[in-house]
Image (cartoon, rainbow over all chains, first blue to last red; front, side, top):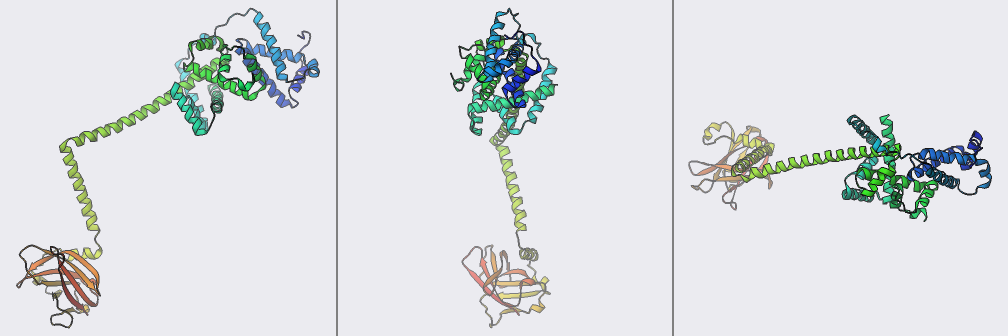
Length: 184
Length: 277
């Protein structure tokens, strides 16, 4: 670890440049790495995944002066290597076991449920008809019926199961963003 | 193991903390492969929906709650999945209820008709109504299907012509079958002296006791220009005759023939000739 090195505008800019020559693309790559590292830490069961992702990025940024000249390969994989070390250090620290979120949260009250449903109705209406139909039919039914529904969508739209899942995911993401905005 | 060989079930296990050694491949692919990352996210959403839909095994459910559900973001995703499920189920329930209601109403209608027609009285009443309706339709369209000339003929001939003396002032033609032009008794009228209707009296060669009526055809130069069924037979001093009026507009200058056929003996034709000059 580079304990004496501070994170400043200079090494942060170098890190961005290391990721991509185009500053805008570099910014997107940075965000993408941060989100994906967070996913990895959460998947490894870390409750403080976002902090660990930031810690990983900070450590890489501190090494930029050396790295920019010595490291050959995909920068993203370097972040991953550092993330594994950050995780190992994290596992050695005594961590207070936190309760899962759903156990800490109060049950949604009727007003909130209604508000969410109202927003969801609005958001579904905002979707183009084909997307609205797809998302409704994709999640409609239970077990066998649901599988049959999805089979029919695949046949109708000539999609592979993978393509259908991705398409449903994209619509779902759009809906979630709309819902969050609607709920304020 | 290359990223493309990572199955969705492997990603699901990884997310639940049940991975058996493929974690590094998944994590590396997550960082460097955008397509893999998007698929990873879709599997994550599916996992959340499966949890909400209670489709996970007990072990998966336990891992989901203890290992996966550890961030505010994921908790929000679960809430979203619950809302989506509730909304879709409600929509489906409403749709099914509407379908059932529609089918019930349809079934009630079928039952009503089935019960209605299984009983003789309603059936008889219905048949009478149908017959009455058909008669009405037939009468309406029947009367309206007449040509103007037929209507005029019907109007002229709606009365009883027993007392022919009443029509002494009108143009008339008394015709005997078989009398041809140039023969004595050949009927002829002057066009310029015709009244607006002409009374025709056609002597019938034979007499019968039974009720009968005739069909007539008016021909000019061998072409039928008018025909009429049900011409009534009247008694006269010497026997029987057909009496009817023809509108004067029908009679232009020229030679005419009238074919009369006894409706009970279709094969017999009685031919009368006359001239309008």
